[in-house]
Image (cartoon, rainbow, N blue to C red; front, side):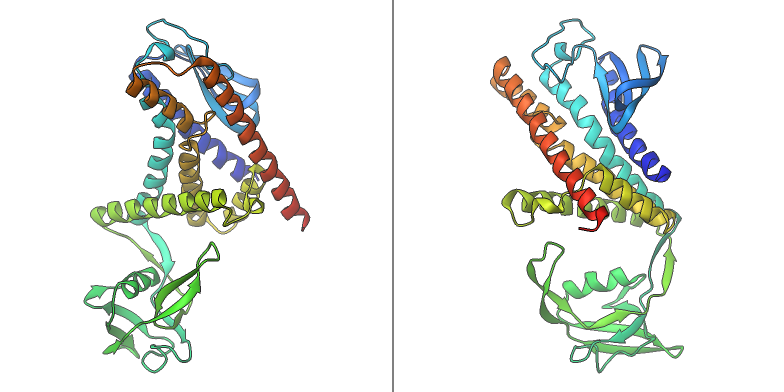
Length: 347
């Protein structure tokens, strides 16, 4: 439980740090930097900013001079005020939070790739009957190379299989290297959204051995980028499925569920915990970019409108949209908490 709260607090801190640094970069005074909402429990003034820990650990905020999310119509024309800055400068501040979430995830993936990423070894546990591998591969075979590409982990096998019509394998069997060939076949499967898709398979199941792989700096940069894109894409698709009704609101999770999952993952070691932290960081970044008025993405839309049209959005409209945004977020939070409690109780 403690590890979960610490990780969530760190993610929030990193997000708000992005806003803080971008605000200072364009000359905006930051009055309060708070981890959590509600009553301030601990505060220390450093420079012009009160750094605080507040009572409700369900988020955090950076209070900039001239900014009031509860009443976005308020203005302050001082040179160091948020509202005195140009729309593009304000967009830069708003992008700082989600941007730092993506940066944190990238750094975690990069760190694991450079210092050692534990993955499934490319060793065959067994083959599935009536598949291409059934008559070619045997239990215990270590797949060393496919189509001239070195295989370091089980993940590498699937990547090559999906883009190949024929596979030339170099396999280590009984301490001997043998050459084998087979052709993948296409099979209908279900993805994580329970949708039917077509995938190429060869019909092998891993033995379960693990291997720790250390990548070169150039490989690590590539892998970290790929993992960041993969995580972001998965979360965006999940949101799309939720909006279209392809997946139900009962799949939403709130803060209780996130803390519960994080606490459980912490029992499996540092790498699973780091990978979950990276995924949660990407999730926080993507969600904050949604065009909902109460979120960074909504404010970005307002500022882009002002930049393009050369006029400010109507204050009454902005105020009503912001209230609607908070109402939507509050409703989703309630649904998420209800789902969390329902799962924990055993429903």
